Image (cartoon, rainbow, N blue to C red; front, top):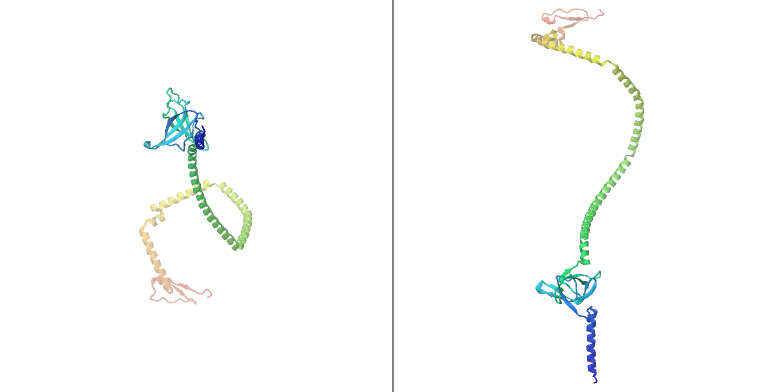
Amino acid sequence: MKLSKEAKVGILAVVTLAMLYFGFNFLKGSDIFSRSNKYLVVYDNVDGLTASNPVQLNGLSVGRVDRIEILPTRSNQLLVTLDIDKQIKIGQGSKAVLADAGVLGGKVIILQIKPSNTSLESGDTLVSGKEAGITALIKEKTLPVLNSVDSLTFNLNRIVKQFDRTGLILNKTLEGVEATTGTLQLTVGENRESIRRLMANLSSLSASLAETEKQVKPLLAKANTFADSLNALKLGQTLASANQSIGTLQQMLADINSGKGTLGKLKGDEALYRNVNGATASLEKLLTDFRENPKRYVHFSLFGRKEKKSAATTPAQSATVIVSDSTQ
């Protein structure tokens, strides 16, 4: 039977499509020549897991991810279907752990088979699990470091601000010191001659002090000799004599206060006191009259003649002093 060209083209197209299908599945990692069991795993988040990602057991690939479905009725959890070689006996309670495939990224499901007398059948559900990947570890380790770096940066910024303020203060201080230095230089320039004279006076004063020291040394030696002489005196006897004199004076004052002796009577006799006061008043009147009328008491005669007494002469005027020339 001879085939037409159209039949040959159809058979070639079918064979080509079959080869493409089986080749695509082979490249995805599926074994098209062997049977596999399907197991279900529910995850809250697959973290980038896609279909055809490998399923490994002890580092060996024993299957692949068949498909991923969302479950709207279960809070949008994700149902992952796994194609695992039927030769792998999975006990009840085994886990399917979602982990990182390596440093370059990607995800892989690692089987952790739990020994059990009861094996799971195709279509049963595995226990889900997640392993902290490199990214999570990096975040876990680097977040405290970043917080410390932020705190350190904040403290450094604060210290730098304080340094800026300190720099401003130092600049102002240096400006003040510079102005003070200029003022001092100007003052020294204006008073240079006075300073020179002052230094000359200080030199002269130093020389005078040296000369004075030479003159003072003999005086100090004499003072030491005088001090030795004072130490040689019998100060105890002198003090005893002074105490005896003071005791005598105290006895005299006690006698006066008690009215003994002339001074005591004078102190205690009020009549004597009044007589003395009267005599003092009369003497004062006499001196006043003598100062105002001296001619009543003193007569001057160059020739030695005496004037006759006037009838109006008072008894107080009877004491006449005649002053004559001694040459006559």
